[in-house]
Length: 256
Image 1 (tube, one colour):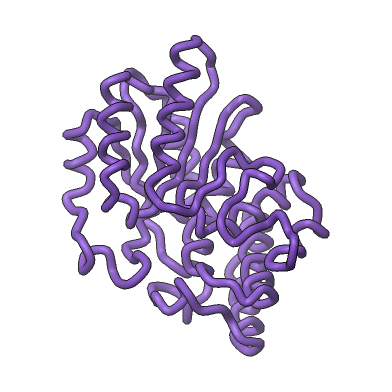
Image 2: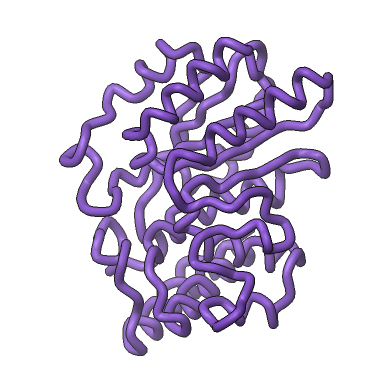
């Protein structure tokens, strides 16, 4: 797994530098979540939606590791007429739904899960949402709906990196006590270190019954590069050449 994690993080950094794109911190916080899903959990008929669509580059780099897209296509990120847009696009092979306007990925995932359950299909639905999306009313409406319809085929992973677009989450709108709130909405709730592949795999594979599963994944924004970690400048900033070189060196040392 370390090789996949290293490759994905390195490609995120390289392509952010090349395309002068933002949201690198948000991409780096979900790498292990994506690796756990794509290399250990997702089956052929399962569906995955990245609701925090601004972390598109992390998903594209993962899809490249899984050979859904070519290196040529990956390297087109940020270029004119590329299908690899800065927010997740369904035009990319392996992407289920275009996202970016926060709060929409979970409602779509709930609809898919209901369809599969109604038709007695064994397909499962996995969705990654941001902690900032907890501020959205559609999130709580979706949770109520999923709980009411006992959508045990739905797994919601919250990327809880504690920082949203402008500041720390608890300074913008506090979402705590998050676990208690989710339990009160009728969900099976688990908490996990979102950078621990073994723990992620265990909870993602855990059997679910009669309720949607919600995983609170505690992560670090900018994970893997010391000067980016917990620094909200990297929600918008892209690396210069020196930062690129230092970041790549750190990634290679950490995930050797």
